[in-house]
Length: 126
Image (cartoon, rainbow, N blue to C red):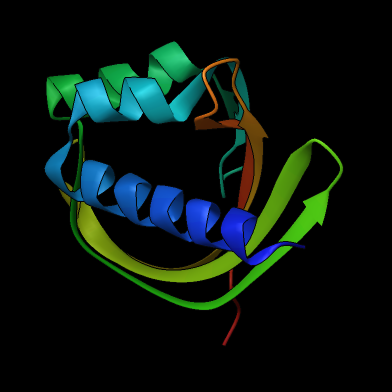
């Protein structure tokens, strides 16, 4: 994998983290592919529209996102990222604190930016 792709993906991952923390729907819209398929740590599948709506309405609010153990793997025209995240926040006003592992597939768009096409989250067991 070229250093350039790794740098681009690391930058995109940081943009995603900051957008999630700020519930920046405009930034999230740019980072998420229109046909996103994301499996939550509860096993439900959500779309881009559902993800953006949760941020826009205030239903989902992240207070902290601490990343570690990131691995980046280029696979032809897409990039796979595995990253551990300790997250805190609120969902429907109920506080949460989770240790999660995210898997994301990033695809390059026609204008050479990166978007998340698919993802999965799972709880890291103690």
